[in-house]
Each structure stands twice: as structure tokens, then as C-alpha cells.
Amino acid sequence: MAGERNSIIISVFSTSSGNGKTITAINLAASLSCEGYAVCLVDLDLQFGDIVTYLKLEPKHTIAEAQRDFIESNGKINAIDYLTTYGHVSFDNAPSITFSVMAPPRMVYDAYNIEVPVVEKLLRDMNYFDFIILDLNAAFSALNLAMLDMSTIINYVGVVDFLPSVKNFKIGYDTLIRFEYEESKIRLVENRANSQKLISGNDVERLIGEKFFHRLPNDFPSVNKAVREGRPLMYAAPNSALTKSFTELARKYTRHQELIQSHQLGAAPVENNKQSWISKVMNVFFG
Ligand SMILES: Nc1ncnc2c1ncn2[C@@H]1O[C@H](COP(=O)(O)OP(=O)(O)OP(=O)(O)O)[C@@H](O)[C@H]1O
Ligand SMILES: [Mg+2]
Image (cartoon, helix red, strand yellow):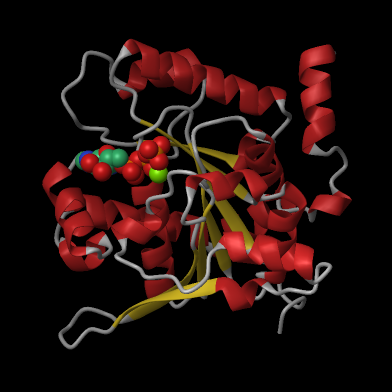
């Protein structure tokens, strides 16, 4: 029943577009679901969300209707009424999975109407899930800061293949630290790690002063096939190294000890946070 469980919230964040946030969010959701956890995947890239396309979903409701009904009913809504189910029934050896999706607005301009406190309320409604995965966009926006505050884990992903992306990755990490997110809450994930590039992941680690928590290999054909088929990688490319790497990443997040530890460190309900995102912004910019 809602209100009785505390979800592990994993936000998938990066400081550049096209770094693999959505691919990571979807495949983490699929792997966690495959492990038997109740999962909700929330598309918070409100203007250009890709989850609906990548999974070929046809949502009946989106977060835009949740926002509209929230206003019209004076807050008397529940997130559960606005979720879409992704389900894959297997008839072979592959496991069947199902997870919920909160779709983004259909119209770009509807994104402007979505209020941060409403999104926070929707996430609180979802606390009956074991895991809530947030697919964010590449910005330190008010919404993203509020979501990072609520998160148990920040899966900070980067493709660090050329100088501007390394610079953005470093600035993003330093900013997260300046916003006083505990380092233990931030997990650095290198995507397309083994692609041909001039800068090595080890150089990036030295520059940042922090080790990568996980490395996802480069596999464009598998990702492309998964997106074309509208399925997670575990079905589109079950034997690829990238699929296995997502399973491994999900297992790192579900490791019992670590899960309990991370949960104690993060995921404070927004109203109980010692310092809200807005006061963090004030501290960073005005001392
Ligand atoms: N591990 C990978 N190997 C090969 N290609 C990848 C990998 N991860 C992502 N890609 C490619 O990068 C593209 C962008 O990925 P994705 O949409 O997940 O990025 P994003 O960070 O969500 O982007 P945006 O900021 O635009 O939302 C994918 O369509 C795919 O072509
Ligand atoms: Mg995306």
C-alpha cells in the first residue's frame, strides 16, 4: 500500500545531451524488473522525452494530465492513475518483465505547466515501488535539482570522448559536489567506454579525482536494434556485452548492503531535507 514503503530513487543525469541517459534509465528499469523488483520509470525530460518512442508505448495519460487534474481537483490525484505499463511476455527462455512508466507531456509547451511540487507529490505517491528511475535532461534546472535532492542515488553518466564533453562532465561533477550531494550518493558511469577516443577514462578519473563506479561498453548496433524494435536490450540483444553490463549495474544497485547504506544516506523526503535545493542554489551563488 502507498505510504508504507520507501522507494530507492535513482536519477539518471548527465551534463551533455546524447550521453545515454535514456538508454541507461530504460535498461536499468528492465534489469531491475527482471530481478523481481517493482519498478517505475519516470520520463522527466519534459520537452524532448524519448522513453515513449524508445519503448513504442501509447500512453493513455501523461504527467501533463496529472498536473492539470492536480490543479482542477485541488491536489486530489494519485500518480497511479497516470502510469502506463510496459510489459514483455516471453514465450522462450527469456524472462517476462513488466514495469510502469510515467510518460512526459505530448506537447512541448505543456512542459512549462509542470510544477516542481506536483512532481515531488507524484514521486511520493509512487513509494510503493521498490525502485523509481528518473530519466532527467542535461540541465541544472529547478526540477532536476529537486529530483536530485529526492534521489537515493545519482547515476551520473558521461561519454568522455572529446574535450568539451570532459569539461562538461567535470563541471557537472564539481557542481553536484558544491550542491552538497554526498559523494557516496553520486555514481560516475562512463558510457561508450571502449569506443575509440583520444582521452582515456583513466585520465578523466585523474582529472575528476574520483573513480568510475561502472563502465558501459560501446555497442551502437545493439542500441539501435533495441530502439528500432521498441524493446530493452535484454530482448533485442540478449548476448551483447552492453546488455550484460546493464545487468551488472543493476546488481550493483541492488546489492543488499549497499542498498541499505545508500538508502540511509539519501532519499530523505523533500520536506525533511536539511537544506532544500533552492537554499543550495543560494549558497552556491551568493555564498
Ligand atoms: N553504450 C552505447 N553504445 C552505443 N551507442 C550508444 C550507447 N549509449 C547510447 N548510445 C547512442 O546514443 C544515443 C543517445 O542515447 P540516449 O537517448 O540514451 O541519450 P540521452 O542522454 O538520453 O540524450 P538526451 O540528452 O537527448 O535525452 C542513442 O540513440 C544511441 O545511438
Ligand atoms: Mg534522453
